[in-house]
Image 1: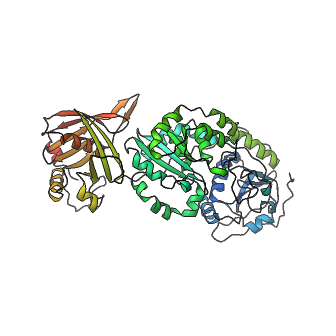
Image 2 (image 1 turned 30 degrees about the vertical axis):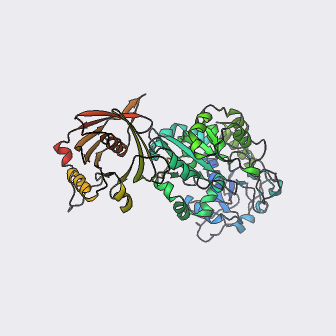
Length: 543
């Protein structure tokens, strides 16, 4: 390992176009100070390096700078991500002519040998489990290829473990509620899940009842870079409109793993992180020749149940909950809970500094900021047995057998509004302007049934648990939903699912006697629903 050299007092950095000014020297002025250069090749490597930086927290002896390693197809996104961090950056040419006390990177590729100073390489995933054709030596794990002159580093999962207490916060941000969150993870390249089975996320969303399951997709950051947000939104538009959560490329993937009830993965390292958290894991693609035999990921996929078709997911999830994955996890993560401390000691030895006293802790991941779209159209299957109604709701293009179409007025658009048997509208949640005209709940429901001859039930959602419903035969009803209470928790169901349940029950015979209580199964928990004559307050409620 090369020894740090004395700094050149005249060596300063210049500003690269679009990047902040970065005045620094190889070794910062002052006794005992050290310079650390983070060599970034892509957005994904930047994110991994940012995860590790807490080892230097609170130490003013360490000055951190970044440089962009040229030659990657994804360097534009890396440049943008660097700019967002507000990091001090050094142009590549200057970085190659400046000696650093430590060069830290998360990719072995590029001309890293041109950067003077001792180097430490960290994996940008959980270990090394893929061999990529056309990159370096054949059949050698990517990241361990001698072609790239790598120095090995230790994988770590400490920040994920630190984030476990925030699970409920993450689920609240995602609007998961009592539903099961199933997270799909796809690595990068031609053997990834999304490359091999591009329709898979949409298939799952169309098959899994909306009120029982929430589906999220974690794509490799390179897919975000290659495809771009615009094309991703267009490509996955139907699934996104049906409620699919598409994770942002930085940090949200980890928050989703913590929030998940189960994970469906290919041969990318994200599946190992999920298993380390104790999540049930299902394999959906083994990566073909890219998967390194006997690697931790290969062992995990050999043990985990395999999902050949989307409709087999419930069976695969049951099998995954009974599968013990501790052995492959142990091979990937040897120091769970201690890796950041060990890494700090190693990096400070390379810097020639005594490490700071006190513990080192990575921050928890922030709560997801991606808000799933609220579906405006559902194909609904309803089963009525006496006063108990079971409702399963799917996207309108589902192939599942259904009972009726339900849509939000006016957001669903002309086609669904003309063909839906059930229409609903939410009461205004924002303050009304000074001059405005508003429907009453009674007036709006009457108007809808008059204008939409195919509609049998119109409902105004007044609050989370209160609905005014007008049925062509049964007339006006007040619908009140009780939350489900159990094990110290309160679970609220979507009132628009309850509207479909009441609609299906009313279709079964003559107008009901009031008041009446139904038991509605709209997902994981059944809730009581009270039907009564509508009161004046509900009839005159302003929408």
